Amino acid sequence: MNQVKKIFLTALVFFVSGSTVSAEKINMSLTEGIKMALERNYSIEESAADLDSAYWGLREARRNTGPNLSWSTEADAVGGKAYDNWGHKEFSNQLSVTMPIYAGGRLKNNIESAKFGLSGAELTLERTKQNVRYTVSEDYFNILKCRSQVEVYRESVNNLRAHLDDVKIKVLAGTVAQKDILSSEVSLAQGEQKFVNAMNDYNVAIATFNKDVGLPTETETFATEQLNYEKYNLDLNDCENYAVLHRPDLFQKEYALRQSKAEMESAKSSARPQVDAKASKSFAGDAPFKSNMDAQDSWKVGLSLNWDIWDNQVTKAQVSRKQAAVRRAEAELNDKINDVKLEVRTAFLNLQAAEENISTMKEALVKAEEDYKIEVVRYEAGVGTNLEVMDSEEKLVSAKGDYISALYSYNTSKASLDKAMGIPIDLDIEPYRNALEDSAKEGK
View 1 (cartoon, rainbow, N blue to C red):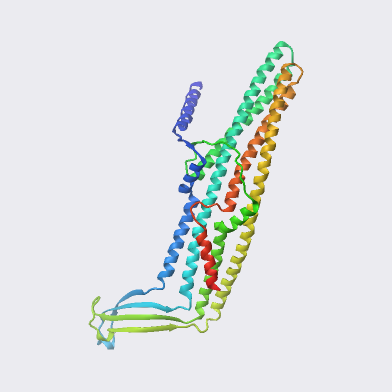
View 2 (cartoon, rainbow, N blue to C red; view 1 turned 90 degrees about the horizontal axis):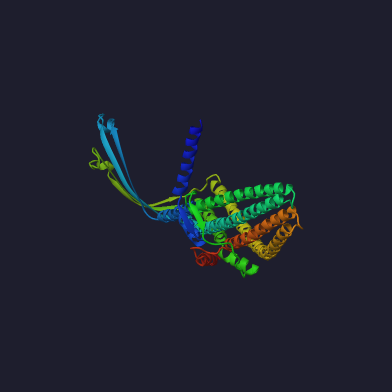
């Protein structure tokens, strides 16, 4: 039984070590991570597919304004008095060309709607990229935070282990009580547990980052940067004004409103006459593509007009439904404006709070380090207690964690403010903004 157990454990160790060796190791900066995510992230690919769909939707709308060539053929067995009562085969063919002359504004508005849809898809793709940049930044800063926490708990375990050794020496010398060993061992066990949990958080943070940048989750990614503080000199009003002029999703709502209006105008076309130009050629014979039946040989060239004078108010209902969609689009636009301003203000205030916390937590950390050193010296001199050492050590670990959290909050808040403002990645928003302004002038 022991032999089987030994073999099993050996195989398990080999499997784990083999998995570790096979995992790829990569050093990566934040800029490199963002670049990789922009190339591999699936949400970007989804938005790119929507952009392709919008492009072909515009192509379809434009092509509907051109000529349409069609051909139809029919093969029949015919008989009766007109054919001397005996059946024979008849093959008839018709070739026709139609082209819309007037469609009541349907074709024009469909093209306008498709144009607005394409611009909206381009803006959505840009916003998706900005969201991915923020997600990857947050993931990266989380790795740095978790790694810093691992170092804090590793140092804490080392301090607790060294203190325990010192306590054991004092117990043997008879200068402290036996209970000091027990309390020190408990503190060490708790510190080791926190270290294990911190390592787990660090590994999960790496796996999450790998997933978002498009790497296998088992990749051993090492973040080459450190959590630091770089002042961000910005004014809240400037940030809000910039966001209103540059947020892609805000302008996407503008284009969605214009698209809804174009669709409403297109729906009105059903109440107007439709004029098409037509040309057709018909022929028939007793064999495919043969023209030996003069009665079936003809051609036509002319215009056709269709007008649904009364459709039981179907068009009115369709237009009313589109009007409701316009009202909804207007409400969504106004709501988005408020959301953008709130998002900018929230990120800005969080950034300010995190900045203040950095200086506060740094001062607290310095004091905690001094207090811990004093308590260790007092205990070694025999004038302090083991409980005071453990308490000061715990406060030191907490102060380090608070300082790390403040740095993390500051960096993530800065990335959040960039996202809220709509700092561009690939797309220049100005042409889209100008196009909306020109369109509004033309409408007036």
